[in-house]
Image 1 (cartoon, rainbow, N blue to C red):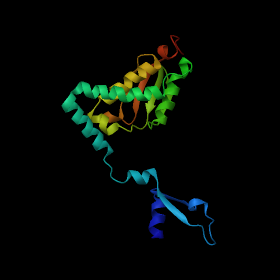
Image 2 (image 1 turned 45 degrees about the horizontal axis):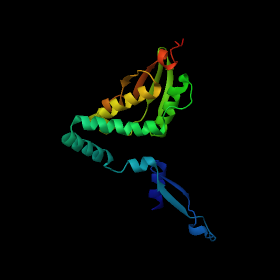
Image 3 (image 1 turned 90 degrees about the vertical axis):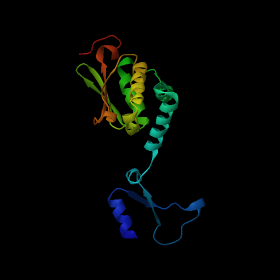
Image 4 (image 1 turned 180 degrees about the horizontal axis):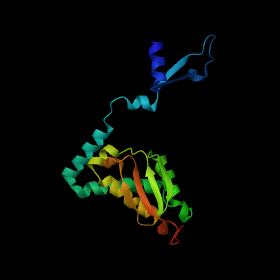
Length: 183
């Protein structure tokens, strides 16, 4: 058993730690007991049906309420994210970075980069990519939320849902800097 557990740890599927005594009990003599836990990578290797369930629910919504119902659901979903991470007291040139931080806290592993014509917001992970591939309304609602949060037009250049490696959104410099053009 220990050889199998060591192999799981070596493959990054599990981790081990000293077992905590229950109820504050004192530990007796001998080697400290170990407990083994799955890592996120280990949990991901098991089949799960979250994406299937979400896609089935959205298919049902589209069949019973129409495409507009799916769009309204997508808008409501991003509205809750907007409420949690709405515009703060940041300066205009810090808004994209603040949005990247907010998206990262939501599981999107986002970053912001200055480019010649403005800034790019990159989402290196998308927790809803499989569902968004079938229901692009999720990406469309997210893009509109970015526009509201940043107070400017943005342009979606790539999405993971369409097969790109990263979701990339371009924010023009004249808008980001509240009317000033950055060099």
